[in-house]
Length: 84
Image (cartoon, rainbow, N blue to C red):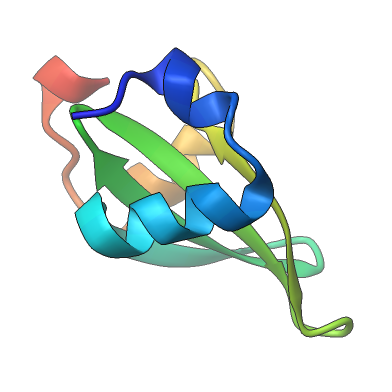
């Protein structure tokens, strides 16, 4: 089990590996020029920002429950209240 602070200290490549091995895909949304995949990892949510035009993952970040993007996710699925 990896803490959110430890996860965020990893390189992009290592974040991808941890998400692939330990994360659970939740849902994908379109956000501006990105396809954003939401994952659940060890009790916290992680967003993966994929740029179709450049065909690459540009960033991986924690999803703050107060972020306005949360509405895009909750419009599609029900996220457990205890994880928000």
